[in-house]
Image (cartoon, rainbow, N blue to C red; front, side):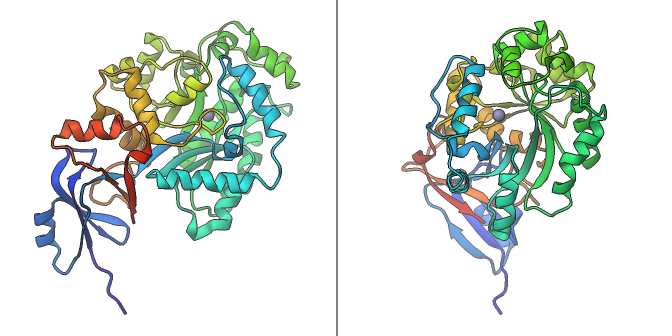
Length: 417
Ligand SMILES: [Zn+2]
């Protein structure tokens, strides 16, 4: 029987993210866990009998974290065009969705999963509302390559007709938490504008009981803000268009962050996705509550909703994560393209800060920082080796090379398990 050994992976640069980059660094892995991080020579002495692997011209980083995607919408790739209105995109989405053949869904989702893995992203916050991704997870079982959380999304803007939001939630969740899936599954509301206040609170309560994050779309489009603050505009028309009973809506007459604060739904386990349309005082509230933000800059461009106030978020020290959103509002699930888009929005934000958003920031936002997001003792593999034609000589240049690369194809990517 062959003995399981510590494997030391060494490279010109190791980027633990939680602390400064290490020149001529190495990590030691044992049964899927990091058991050593430091200089190659030190680790080689520490673990006699180890297996040694050198990764020339490479940078070792933790797996990237895509904190907001909708794998389920992957068959819609190239079927929608960039727009200047979120509500018209939703109408197109509903129409395009009905044209997808039954046989197209699963292959497109599997292709999207491969795209993530090949791009070094092995941790996700994935949102769906059909149960298709959980069924693929069950089918793949031990071969399922991703870690993270699948959020089963609820859209229910009216007060539940039986008047019991907690019962509504339990009925949705029960069939999913009875079985063991390769990723945790929990409920999430779509947004403040599409889920009744009573259900928002019920979902938050369940997430807290289970120690899982509470995530929702927040302040994505001007139409969402118009609807929430004044109870009018294209978002209201869209709900009516979809046959929603608008007499049973809860219009907060304030922006989503103020409303979430009023409902006491903001804390360190809240993950607010997009946050494009936010004022300074709303960002102050997010900081005060310790809530997390997930930025999806390329989806924002596709939907013509504007750019997030990134510099203001960073200045306040808000924990930020990065997501691609779905292939219905993006042409790829490439965390490198998203990092470059953020750098373009706020060039003064250091590349190291953006790299942290794509790794540790995402892990923290999903409540997974004890397992992922950094190269520290006890964290889980996989680890990612990014091979470049030329290795930069300074920390700043290494971080810039990753963040401004624009595409995962700038590197040869090896997944180290
Ligand atoms: Zn989304």
